[in-house]
Length: 102
Image 1 (cartoon, rainbow, N blue to C red):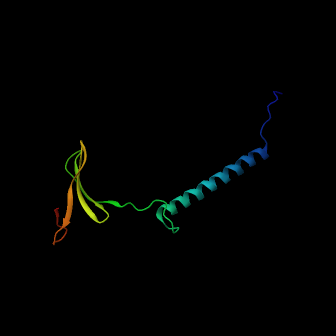
Image 2 (spheres, rainbow, N blue to C red):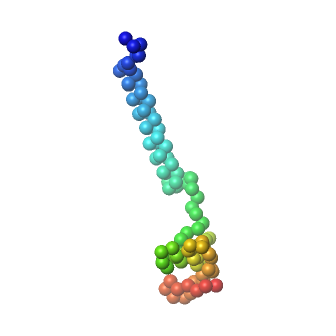
Image 3 (tube, one colour):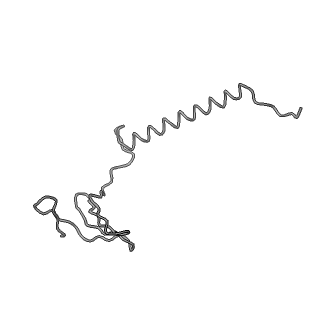
């Protein structure tokens, strides 16, 4: 004999029990985090962002125009190779979806 103990059925059941407990705790944690992020538990883990992208239009491979809303004010923003630049704030104009720069 080499003196190495072979694992028995009790050892295997112990490992399987520990693994199942860890998997159940992991599943419960994932469920709770998902509910917190969606705000369904009455508390939102991630507060809603005050910045929303309303519309975007591609101008080529790496350039685009975005209409971004921040706390009720809309801005026209350009994005390209050189970075992001605010072009101006937008004013709603009477008419369907028409806007003008301030």
